[in-house]
Amino acid sequence: FNGQPLPTNERFQINETDDGTSTLSIRHAELTDKGVYTAKATNAVGEAEAKTTLNIAGIKPVITTDLDATLQATKGESMTIKLSATGTPKPEVVWTRGNDDLVPSDRIQVTAPTTEGDDTYTLTILNVQPEDQGDYSAKITNVGGSLKSKKCKVAVTKSPAFVAKPTTQEVKQGETAVFQTKIDGYPVPKVTWLLNGKPLTPKEGAQVELNAATGDAKLSIPKVDLQQHSGIVTCRLENPHGTQEETARLDILAAPLITTQLPKQEETVSGKDVTLRV
Image 1: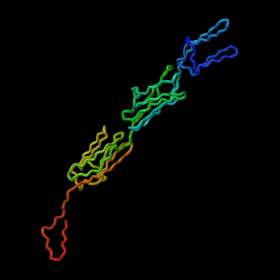
Image 2 (image 1 turned 60 degrees about the vertical axis):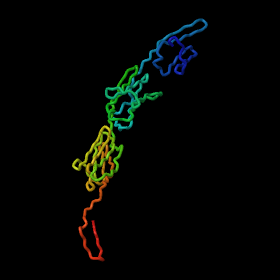
Image 3 (image 1 turned 180 degrees about the vertical axis):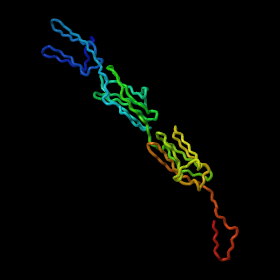
Image 4 (image 1 turned 135 degrees about the horizontal axis):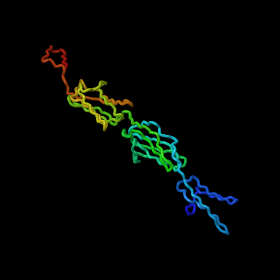
C-alpha cells in the first residue's frame, strides 16, 4: 500500500483460492485507505505485479432525525436539542443560534457519535437564561458535502417562585414597616402586596419597589398605625405561567392608651362597693 506493507489489522483481509486468485477486502473503508495498492506474485521463475489506485468518495451527510420545531426551556435548568445524521466519514456538526456559531464551554456542551451505529448529535445548555432564547440550527459537514438542519425555536419560561420569603415584622407605632423578598420567574412576575386581603396602594401610604434584574422586591409602609395596618401581609407573584403567594404578619407595638378617663371625683357611702373603669 503506497509502497509499504499493508496495515496489520482486522479491517484488511486477504483470501487465497485454489485457482490462484488472491482477494484483498477492506472493511469499512476510510479516507486514509485511498492510495496505490500493489499485488506482487513470486515463484522460482520470477515475479509479476499489478497496481491499482483506490479512491474513497465521501457519502454526503443525510439527516435521519431533524430538530424539533419548538422547545420550551425552563430558566435555571438545562435544555438539550438533538438530531441524527449519517454520512461517510461521520459528519461534523456546528451548532448555531441565529447567525452565531456556538462555542463549547462549561455551560454549552456538545456530543457527537463515538460508537458504530450511533448517529446522534446533541447540544446541551446548562443554567438556561432568557438570552438563550432564539432559533437554533445545525450545519452538518463531511468531505461529501454539507447541509443545514431545520430551525428549532427555543422559548425560555419559568413560573413565579420565591427565592427568599417575606418574614413577620414587629414595628413600633408611627415607624416604617419594611417587608423584603427575592423572586424569580420569566417573564418577570408582576408583584402585588396585600394587607388583610386588600391590595396596598400609594393611597394607603404603601411604597413598592422591584428590581427586575436582581429579583429583589420591597414593601415599605411609613407611619404604621395599630388600627389601620396590623394583620397579614401577602406578597402575590403572577406571570403567564402561574401564581405564587407568601404571607407574613405585621405586628405593631403601641404604648398603652386610655380611651375612657376616670371621673375627676367619685362619692360613695361608707360600706358600699365602689367600681372604677378605664
